[in-house]
Image (tube, rainbow, N blue to C red):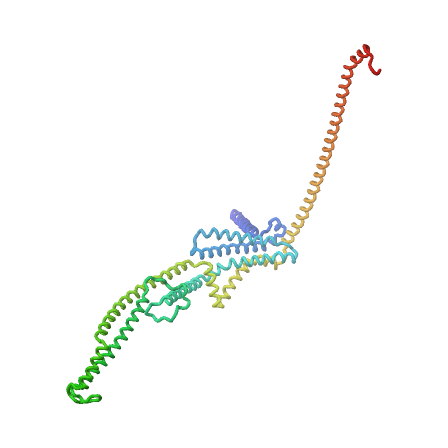
Length: 451
């Protein structure tokens, strides 16, 4: 017997607990339990609607958590507070969207629900986007890192192109697209390189001239020697001794030597060679300094660019996902399917309201609303009539009171006038009484003139 009572108690407890959970879910759907007591078969439907509203709020909270963790670069327990606030906002908004549309007439019902459906759809997109980014987080971050590496490589290549070394081949004129990218470095080997090239050109030209003059002088001296020794050949007399031709040829050689100072030019060439060696050392040192300064500036700008790329922001993730979907139709379709799924979840309660028709609960709510409106109208009208009657009565009392006061004032004035007249009469009578004896005496002693 005890076991049966325990089992019965457990069943009652479980039923009460499930009923309590269902009641809480129906509260999220904006229902009135007292109204549902009249139509208990509608409880299951509105329990499901409340469950969908709760599910949407939970997904919204997770979505906000994903979004904030991506913005801040990682999860933090403090993120749960704003995520909870966002979930409550979405919960109340969905509850309002559901509970504010209970009209049983189809036209008005559609007019009420369609705008709410648009709001729910927009809310679904807002909830879905961070979740989509979280699902494709690895691919999105890899795409962003690849794009950042490409930007760094392009920056370095552009700076190298706009700031070439002096010994590298350069196109004539200012490099195209290098405005604002040319470095102003104190170490400038270009002038030394130009001076070195000019000096080397002088050395080459002077060396060629010295070689030509030396060959010409050697030819003239050899021709004079052959003539003086009596050798035979083209342009030679074949007569040995210092004849006229021998002296002429020697004189020509001496004149050429005098007019072409080969030794002086050799001295100048040796000086130019020393200058070339010096310029090469200075140019090499300057070029190394310039290259080090240029590479340091390139590294500085590269480090600065990389410092701005440390944290992957939410907008950067959106842009990367958009670029990835543009390049991959399958990924584009997948992301939109996920978005539409969340939109459908958020719109599901509204769609149930719109497409499911009116329920007995809706009709009861409509009847009660209409009844309350009529009752309120009657109460307002009765209150208005009572207030107007009371105001009319007060106005009448005010008029009567004013009339009484006016009559009292008139009565007081007449009394005042009567009192004044009485005082005047009494005064006249008193004066007349005092004057009567005097008048009588004068009349007896002396005749009154004119009598």
